[in-house]
Image 1 (tube, rainbow, N blue to C red):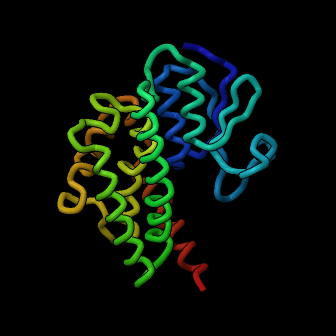
Image 2 (spheres, rainbow, N blue to C red):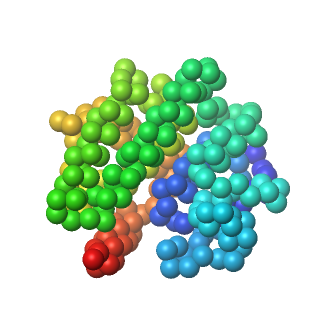
Length: 225
């Protein structure tokens, strides 16, 4: 499917940008990718398109901008109805998927930010919180190959960045949060998710991502009071 009026503003290593790219790829939508030099600078065009949060990703469709990755994924599935179905069709399943996606973003992402940017007792507390979040998240995966069942869907895309970026965060911060003892279902899902062709075809280079992660953590630690 070709749609030349689709542009995506993102950053090559941004997990939230990848959420949107995965959705576009699953739908077979052609798009123009605009890479932002974040965190060093933000283009004037991005600021014009998203003056509220001034963040990536931003999807532009027929000249109309849309921000926030999970909102964009829903828009993509609703706009291009044919082909791969991303959002669950059953209202209850859809509500549950949205619930778990919000849980992961509100609880897991914040814990990971503290794990990544802190040291000592503060970091250890964040590690324990993150481990509880991931253990709880497994409830949505019990008895299933993917969060969407036999195939990946909205919740897999929402949480999918953990599969690639979380091990890098663990290595960078020298901690362990998802393992066979704490969250075996999630750990196994990591491997299955990253083997899906659409997913692995647009993952950023791991070595480059890891190196950037180390530099960013050192910057954050050096700015601590």
